[in-house]
Length: 89
Figure 1 (cartoon, rainbow, N blue to C red):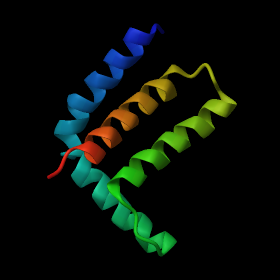
Figure 2 (cartoon, rainbow, N blue to C red):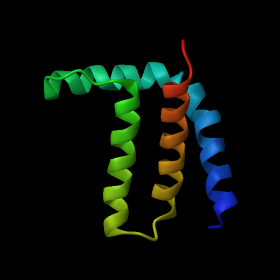
Figure 3 (cartoon, rainbow, N blue to C red):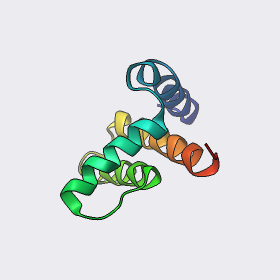
Figure 4 (cartoon, rainbow, N blue to C red):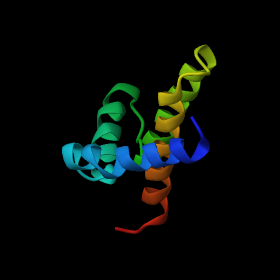
């Protein structure tokens, strides 16, 4: 996959069906963080959820570095996390 294809695919995924199916990234990552808090016993921010999802994909890439889907997902999670971190609601 070329870099433009990776970025365009990530944009299509996070701005299309996923947003329609799961709602706003902030709301989704907030609710995920609340679930993780129950397991971990510490507060989790939506930005931390995005970072942890990127880490999950990085770990998967250590095992299968040619798996294009993980590269796309990293771009998507980074974009969503950046949007959450830089936009006041």
